[in-house]
Amino acid sequence: MPSNHISTVALEKAYLKGQHKIPVLRGVEISAKRGEFLSVVGQSGSGKSTLLHLMGLLDSPTVGEVLFNGERIDDLPNKTRDVLRNRVFGFIFQFYHLLPELSVLENVLAPLMIRHPMLTYWKRKRQYKDAAQSILDQVGLGHRLKHRPSELSGGEMQRAAIARALISEPEILLADEPTGNLDTSTGQEIMSLLKKLNDETNLTILMVTHDNAIANQADRIVRLSEGRIETLAEAA
Ligand code: ADP
Ligand code: MG
Image 1: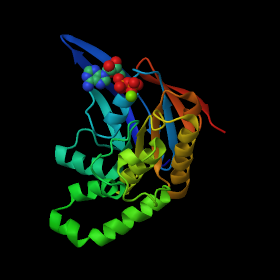
Image 2: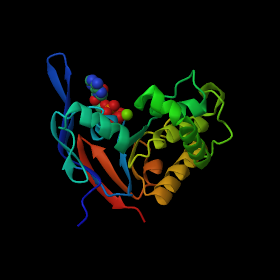
Image 3: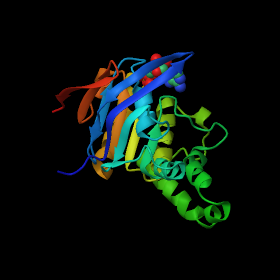
Image 4: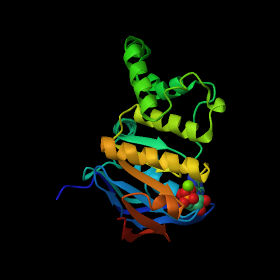
């Protein structure tokens, strides 16, 4: 049996509130196969963002494990975790988190600029720009390269954020309420784009949302409730 692309074992996370430990995740077992589009649905405050942060190595669990290709990754040294976070995972968020002073093209190039020494970046600048241009074409934003985020619609901002996530060629896209700030039809366009990327590039997508209609569009849905995963029906 092929191992899971990304999974967790008995994952727990508690936050300290004064003297009290507040449990948020209480033994989450979740797994996605390579190329799967999995959604996690749950109410606000159920721990969806917490779960994505743990799986993407943005935070550490209190107890339990995160596995990538069947190997534990949450307990690796910080530097290794940094490399994995930047190379394996792409992140998109409800509020896009674009840098307002930069153009769309510069926002997409920013992860490469941060990652590489200045000289390396400059030597490869033409190649990186071509890559960014091609990804922006792929997400339907090839005509907005020089625009600032403030000059874009919400759907365009999310497309720019998706392009920025894709520039590092991630294997796994972690999407935190990617349509949460968009009207229904624009949200639908973003879902279509995510489905297209999943189909065409074999990108594994793990999306969390409170919206059942959005969650239903993934290959498979699970529910996060009371700090644990309940399995729901397979999508057709
Ligand atoms: P969701 O994304 O499903 O809305 P979150 O994962 O953001 O849920 O939060 C789950 C619970 O954990 C909430 O009660 C929230 O207040 C709490 N929480 C989240 N992050 C922190 C933090 N850094 N410190 C303390 N409590 C937190
Ligand atoms: Mg959240």
